[in-house]
Length: 272
Image 1 (cartoon, rainbow, N blue to C red):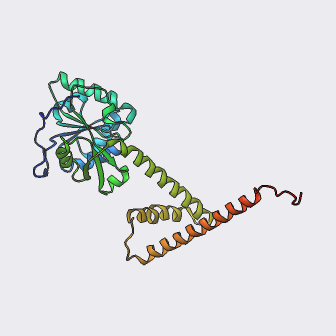
Image 2 (tube, rainbow, N blue to C red):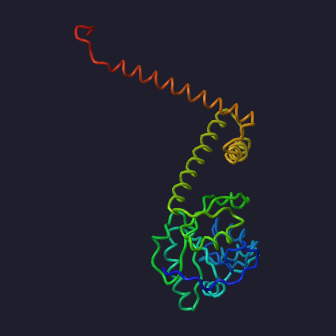
Image 3 (cartoon, one colour):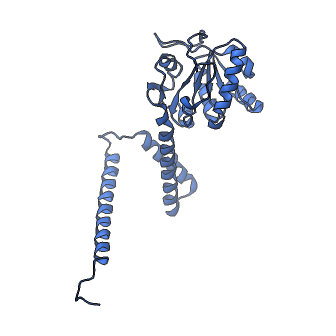
């Protein structure tokens, strides 16, 4: 991969003072995250859309009122290309687009957003490629919640901060930590939702109330984490959790004590 700073044109929205402008942005891959990013970024910069499925591209373009273009048209128009395709397709999509861009005499910056695909593992191409890994879930982005995005590119961090200013904070770090963190958080959230749904359903609560408890109370509590010290309700729940933890530890200790007693060596001369 080569490092090239050319080909960055003017954008259609306000840039961060002192940071380069990403110019016209192409979003390639219009799944849930790609469509949400296009919508958010399109409020600040010129955006063009492309998807390998023409039907998906037409539908999202109509919903967002943004232009849908062919792969060649996007490379002619775009200064920055966001790769939002499925992880298993990222390498192939990058190779095809970068090779076509070279034939067209264009040098856009390619941005890899696939959290499970390290940028360093992508195939070498005749273009500059950087990673931008969001610690997020698409619904949170759609709701406007700010997050942290990680890049290993110190050279391009200014441009990426301008691009993602409405999404959250772009920090310099190891991109490969984001994928496992997102997956661990997803598993923990699904585990908590499933556990709460089972508990409330077992109490006879109707499905709509169970859904509200998950989507509003559970999620709202997570958004408020860590809780403020002056919240008496949360403080009482934390005290209850601490008491339950202490009780569980005592019970575990007692169980281990009984297990040790039951498995004690036989005493010579004792009862058979």
